[in-house]
Image (cartoon, rainbow, N blue to C red; front, side):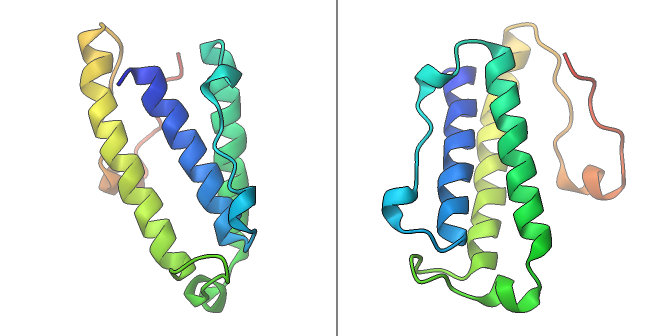
Length: 124
């Protein structure tokens, strides 16, 4: 789909899985509706909130917590986090050519560049 729809999907999936990782019941897995994103600024703001929330939660878990399986999931937490990582990379690799075709700025998204400490791409 569109760049926007890819990004709304990623924000929604991360938020829904985070609810599950916290042990919330499936009914609490709220998929964020696209109507909440009327501008790029609102989408970016919601994405930042979601990423901050996910980061704070993940860094609070120790090894035992990462190996645990919440009652509401069939997977251990670390397995879901690997899924979220590969899922995000997959969709971002689909979005980058769309951005380039529309004349937008793209950047390398290889994980190893993050590990090497390369600077973040400029914000637009």
